[in-house]
Image 1: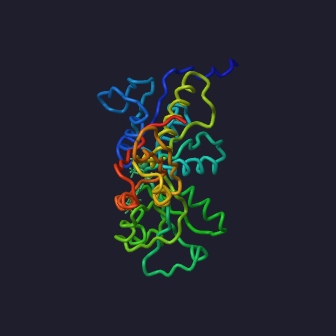
Image 2 (image 1 turned 90 degrees about the vertical axis):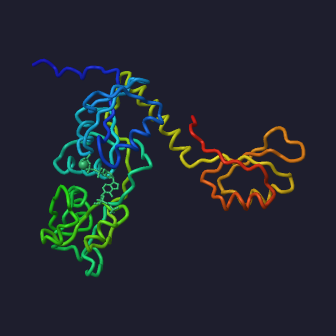
Image 3 (image 1 turned 180 degrees about the horizontal axis):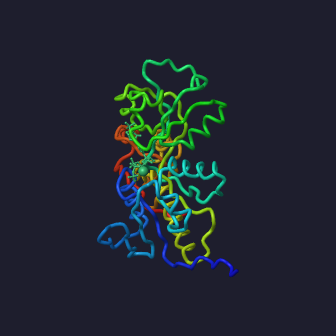
Length: 303
Ligand code: PRT
Ligand code: ZN
């Protein structure tokens, strides 16, 4: 028998993102901020990378982990909830891990929570014993129940999970929650967090060994630059030397004050702040003796 041929080397990186839905626009905006641009195909399922050899595949979010596992795509932007559900489902049937989260991306925040009928009093996980729980995340829920030694029926539904208790197909649910409005509208209340989730950049467990590896490393470095500066603000101001202690006391603890050259009667200063500065904070800093205050957003950085 001839040996299995090695996967052909590819020199273009392929990233799967959601075609439509909550993660579609922020995913594209983030990749654009990383310096990528594309020529769209007519059917808009495939976007050919122009600025760099990095192409996009626009798909349903449920398909993204499988596309990475099969090597069709090298990276994907997907909710950690979806990635972990499919990873656990693979493990439960004895398949090896095929993908992993590489970076958290700071959008798509939500929680996978248990929602029970409003009239129930929550007394703890023991009350789940023997109950029917509707969810679109059966593998996560099954693992969570098993860790707590709870025997409950997991009712898998692909959508409209929140109406299952009213329809009588389940007693309670495990579903994604962001504002909580959907639970409330269905006379349910959130009681336990099974998982906190954000959108992640996911990649294969195996390392790439052709020119895509360099592209991936460059993209990760740019993403890290964006992540590191997301909250950073540069405050610039003037102040007399003797006002500095009072001003510094009003700055965020992370602020690093640097003296700039120039300035005759007063010092010219800049402070890198790890968090934003409110109008009220700026006004207090001004009252403490600073003038010419300016707050600049940090757009890019290479560590
Ligand atoms: O078509 P495709 O399969 O690609 O999209 P989809 O409908 O499966 O996914 P989509 O776009 O709804 O969600 C994509 C990802 O966004 C999810 O996998 C999560 O990672 C993330 N996300 C963040 C959410 C929510 N917040 C969220 N609130 N996904 C779903 N919801 C649901 C929630 O379950 C509830 O039913 O939105 C509803 C409103 O939530 P409340 O709490 O604000 O009322
Ligand atoms: Zn989906």
